[in-house]
Length: 170
Image (cartoon, rainbow, N blue to C red):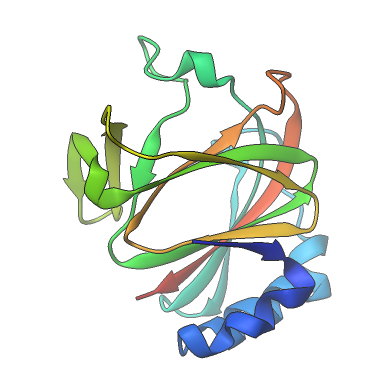
């Protein structure tokens, strides 16, 4: 897991052959210019950067309170992980908290969906966890071995966030 400002991401380019392209796009005017039609997942905008190897999802949403985790009927925050893609999550407007925990210390809640590259997890009692405050201009990079819980409200105050998630094929 990496947490840094967007201007410094090039320092990590040697870690993966596709990072240079992903980080360059994140610093581009296009990344900031794209505007979802509204708030909510259904309004997210998918942008091809390098076919299926690197693409971005620009989204606006309301953050969620940590205490709503696992709430009946969905809608609350949850732990997730991916196997095929690295997530580069960059807050463009607003601020949120993102949780991090090592994947090998988590338990599966919903089996891995290969088509969506998505697994829902539950943190075990022995799972270390860090909560990261991510303001405008900062990015968190989550690798396949990183469980993460994005989109959390800062200080429990729900707020609107504009974020881009660049998906980088492993």
